[in-house]
Image (cartoon, rainbow, N blue to C red; front, side):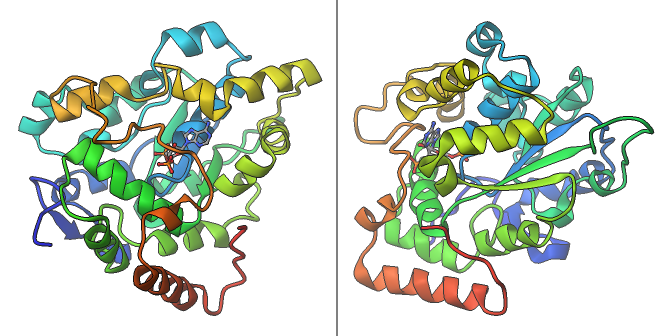
Length: 315
Ligand code: A3P
């Protein structure tokens, strides 16, 4: 399909050869030089891998399980998307009411819970150089990476493009573009594997969407320990309930409804033709979206990328 994914076009950016919106080149250096704080928590993912889910978990753990604020203030404000304002040009930013998101994150009170989809090499350099102060228990900044089976990412990203960018190509066209690594943020496998290599760093936690589906209480407990929080069994139960798909789907603070309306310049009524942000939340749902031929291509792509790594797809 010759349909572009975005008005601004997409480009390959110097290392790591990541495909990203053309506008980003004007902001890349500023983001690389971004001042990281010792008590930051960074939620890092390839798009559609369980970012929103993880942000909600981490924000609540960091903020003493303050459900009232979590319901009252949209997640996009509590846990901002660092580079959102760097992806589109000024005219589009104005139309979509997107501000200088990097500045917004700079102004945020600590402890910040920051979302980014940038691949490792485009992230702030200080993520790896800011060290914990003497006597501080916690290594900082803390990084929570979330990976998801790229086949589910592919299907979810296709629906995301329909929802946010009015993409009208077929699912097959979209997945071909993903395999060619010309969708925004480039190669999903390269993204995952870069962070997989860093998983033993003391300030990195490597989670997966599939683990969260299989054993949410276990992931919540491990994440709580990583963030130095303790939870009673009652607190754990309530948090898992808040993080369930049903409850997040019905929670306007996390369902991205305002954002969808803004970006599409339309009402939130999707007329049943386009699926909402909280779409299915399943593992293996991609099978319903792809033909056997495409399935084979996706599997070959994974084989090629995984060669020589010890990454285990947890499905
Ligand atoms: P699907 O499109 O497969 O349904 P991100 O936040 O990184 O954009 O990821 C969005 C994906 O996570 C969507 O996947 C969405 O439904 C799923 N998701 C969000 N919250 C979830 C939850 N509480 N439980 C399961 N899946 C969830």
